[in-house]
Image (cartoon, rainbow, N blue to C red; front, top):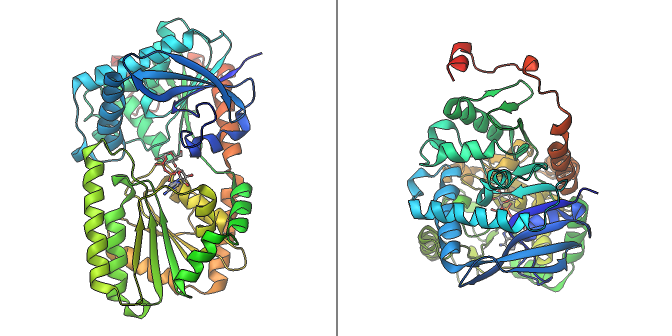
Length: 477
Ligand code: ADQ
């Protein structure tokens, strides 16, 4: 029987908590069975790469590989997080590129392919996650693996003018076309990917979205990632009555809670968010003493300079805002850089009157969906959401804002804090239906079907419909 082999950078190792890629493990819950293999980096850096350990966790077999310190640094800190992450989040100004980092990235992808080949069976289905492993299908094909390989990009994809900034952009784009299926979060990402394929590689694409390059046909489409909505709702309803949520509510003393929950990352728009909150207190003084903003933002990727810079900037802003507005009995902004258990956060979401989610760019943003899932239907809070989060495509009933404009954030916060109950309920109900329908389970099933579905598609040349307006350009290739 064909087995599903999932590949991601981080895996749960030996069932240890804290090492699991929480969101991904939850999203994959329905496809993790004892026959499923989940392969990734063990979290260990040593002298050499390649040592494999096997364990069972999250209902699947986990195979984890150690990486040599120097490989990890070039692959992960370097090319993945200092080149691909900023570029694919529309921040070429923050991008730094070094050929040795790219070589390290290719080295690790080849090491992953070698390790995979040691246990892959010909009919296994390989499902690769995220920007760390774009070349993996090409590496596996070079090693004569002929089974189905799918890829899912959790972060955004940029239009050709931006993508062409990337020195090895052509090679990576071509490598993406070696997958049988490439899944994205939104239609916008798919449109950008296809535009890059046509403009940079000059491959043709059928109206069904099948890419015809020199490799096997590749299908691309948008399958938005979701959450386990019912489980998160139930967790929030229970956590609301637990000690931490009660303490939070007591500490608010009847004031309205605005809540932000993010990894501390420059893509999450935290400085603009803090400034927007400060602007609310200046422009709408009626909210002073009646509102409190809690931001939970655990530090991440501390080994990348840009992350340390944003942390420093936030420390300053918190001091400024509290210095300007605080009173002897009121702290307007509380800021926590520690990680917190999901159940505790679920309870906090339920206590909050406003969920403030303002990334400058985000593949999806699961926090927005978790906020919706956590609300009490009788008295739901309001979601203020960046229009540049992938989630905005689905959550049109949030108050959508441009996260670069602190005044717009302030206006939306004011609207959220003064919104009548009937409107809050109507908006929440429509969003909940969508979050419930587009669940984690729907996402994983659709992705696997898409990886498999390609096998049966009509890909005869006669059925091709060229998207290029200029057929001659197509012929010149
Ligand atoms: P992330 O950038 O990590 O993920 P996001 O989707 O917001 O972003 O969060 C993932 C998970 O981490 C959520 O389940 C959330 O609850 C949890 N989390 C966030 N902040 C936390 C905190 N302060 N403490 C504890 N847990 C926290 C990437 C992409 C996203 C995409 C996801 C999934 O960048 O755009 O939505 O993958 O595809």
